[in-house]
Length: 160
Length: 124
Image (cartoon, rainbow over the protein chains, first blue to last red):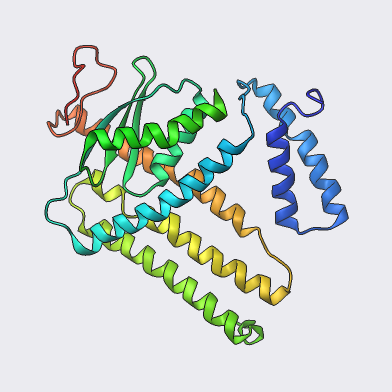
């Protein structure tokens, strides 16, 4: 199975993408199967580090959490833009991370940047610190605790 | 839109509502781009358009074409996925370029390079 599908998740995603794009018909399902079989082999040539991903509840929980947070921070940022609270302060946060897997860090970077109000700037792999810019910086420790409790633990479950 | 008469009234109302919502949120993001003061603050508001703004318009699109073709059209989900994983890269690139410039100009209000061994303490 591993020899046939070196990157099973990528094969599954490619298959789903092909079927979604072309509509469901038997011919395209066969074609999608072929794409899922052949394309991931390109990654073998590139010799990338294989991610170890545990598929489970943590993944669903993370997706749900991120969606909820995106909606919540959309409202928060819209409020800041429209009503311009006087005492708002933006600033940089240094956040210690325990994540080591580069895939987990990439996912965390996308989550933090895709959520309005927070922006990932830099990662120091040697000292395990990431630099984040926050639009509404009320309490630095609260932000650090939020990101560590909400995302980091789930990412650890999935990737490490 | 030519196909619009085929859309039943209830669906047209829902689709219209979602498109308007998405457009309104994107507009708020664009207004924020003008209203914010520093470059780093300006990066934040446009993410409204790329998250909920895109989301609402895609929901409208899914409803519209699902009703008209009377089968679920889901490839909008792919648009959402690709927008979500690609736009942060642009934002990060822009913000890092600004940070690099500010640091090389010796600006005081940006944190110094994380890699520098001599400044360990947090400052902002």
